Length: 131
Image (cartoon, rainbow, N blue to C red; front, side, top):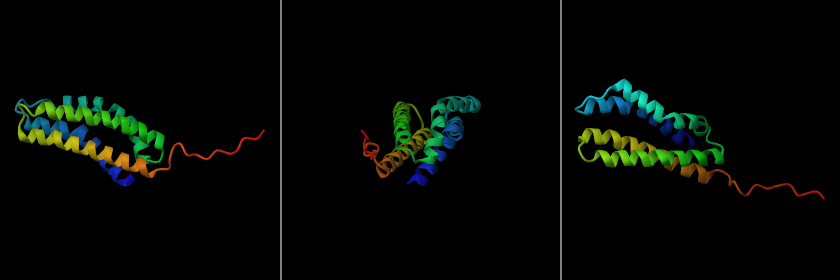
């Protein structure tokens, strides 16, 4: 599960940073600037890049819980962009945004399943108190 999460995460980061701006520049009839798109995506990915070490390690339930909350925000934003682009975008452009949504959805799925497999956060045995 951890390997699936790591692979999907890295694919999504590369796709979001490079693939999405390049493909949108190709498929959008207005030909938006690729460098500007990459710069915008790099700015948009700052929180994801901060989370990358904890996602790649995939061992701390607390860190993965925070990672899951942040990726849910990315999922929501990606869904809103996809929904907003339905009107007035080409099928190829919609496919670019749909792939982004699917990758983030998979990341959230792997995070959820990995969190269920990790040891419970609230059932930690504490040593008895000494009086």
